[in-house]
Length: 311
Image 1 (spheres, rainbow, N blue to C red):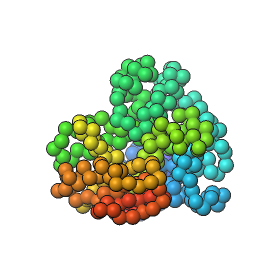
Image 2 (cartoon, rainbow, N blue to C red):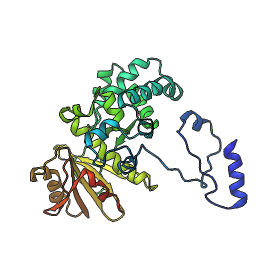
Image 3 (cartoon, one colour):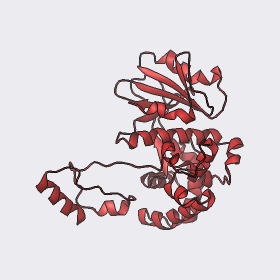
Image 4 (cartoon, helix red, strand yellow):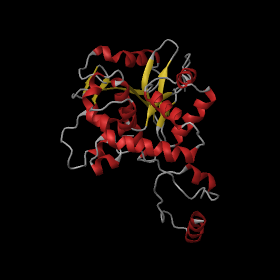
């Protein structure tokens, strides 16, 4: 009913921007909405806070620690209420499983679904293998597809599609799996403090996840499309992220190590050798502090990732 009243007011007045509707998305509610306001609305996706937004909380140290950031995550409630991440995400996860999942999809075995989400967390940054995930969970491939759709629709996971435009290579066609918040992913991996991240087997994947989310937030907060992909061919040549822009692409490799060496540029050099006809800028985002130019590549500290947000 509300949207029908809004449509009438908008159509009669002809004035744009009179109404801003915010809140958590309810998929069941959207299924029942008969008035879409097509042609009269702009829809903005808002992920959890960006790193720059987190910096605005007064009780945070001036020098943010990357492992603390990843462990704490970026949900506003975590910072507003000053709750330990384990307690915060335990509550969030149980609420999501017990309430939201029941409303979104009729999943009878919530314990099995909970285990499935944890198995997804163990695959962060990996090309999705539906058969392997189904076998480890103990359900069919079709069930896994349905559950992944639920996690995507409820902004728990992010699926990154492969880049294929203008490329004549044998490419991987499956997407890569990430989470919409690194704090939730850390909780699902049973990480209980930030120090554990430094030697965790998924340290690189979580750092890569953090970088992807910063890129996504910068685009979504401007009302832009996702336009972020990855590259991987059958010879296992891989580029972590490719951001497609109007006149070029940003080619991004991500390494969690704190020390730069030329060996980290292997994937970017591969791109330059094989796709020099594509107008592109190359970036290495790493866990160190120094941002510099090196042999036509941009070496960017995670602290200065906003360098990539222009354009």
